[in-house]
Image 1 (cartoon, one colour):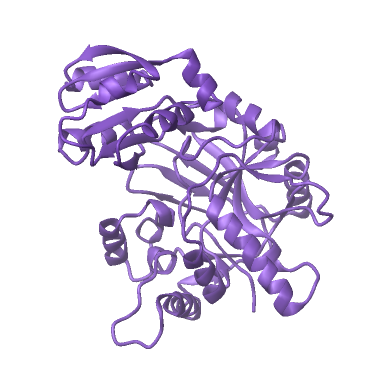
Image 2: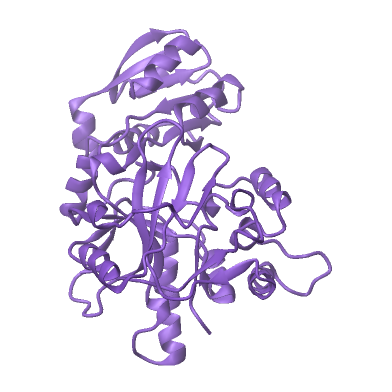
Length: 399
């Protein structure tokens, strides 16, 4: 079963900075424009180490710049090390909807290596991993938590959230992020034991987890065999339960298709299409709010129903698999992944995309069933929100 251990957290000093001004989203959802806004918000904003840029005129590369910044923030007292190792219960509460409560700790596979106990829940698209590996090697720190879903029942109840949080912040989307410090040995053991009782499915951070495994192998080659801090990675672990998760779909924006191409006709090979009307706010809103499988173009909105042979050909009834099957038949085109139906429809309305395919979200029960069967969902099937913020706590690996 997986290891889940306390660590000595490095956190912003609330007397030195306002946490609202220094937290940042995960690196892979930050656009260049958003990065510039965050960096300008505060000299100590976490984006400066999470997505570093070299200083003009400096001989240091971007990764060395991040390491130097992290050291400088500690030396100046902007960042302070907690007095003892701890686990960090963490709650995210959106303006509307239920909160998500989990716990941040140091997660890693069991040392016996008998069987995998940390599993990706979906296939990943190719992505350069050297960037995160070079950042990890330079800073020797886990800057943002990956997100794991625990199959252990009762994890939420095992967390001790009595009393006010140690620190809290509100992000740009109005989500409240609260962090507690759990350091009492008995309480730490109870939570760690609960996490270790069952496997963990990765929700977010697949590439960072794979990078951490690569770095751990490099560290063993450098330092010799035996367990070390690099064997573990900072992770937010949340119970895989309906009342703890908000699972959204990842929609597809299409561009670059030949002018005049009959997209509804092409999709008709795999789907029945029923025209819902012109793509007005009312029609698109009804489809989006209902979580429908739909096609949106600049002139029409269509409701899609998969053919039985499409499910057989795709090997799955998941929309991500069915849509991938259909897109493979199209002429060369570009696909952009959109994290809300409003974003997907808006890109069509502004002419940025020719069309959008709205997907239905999977359920927590489907995620659990696929995980327990040892299967990975197709790439870009799920979108978990809200996202844990970089800057709530950092984990140093030592020299």
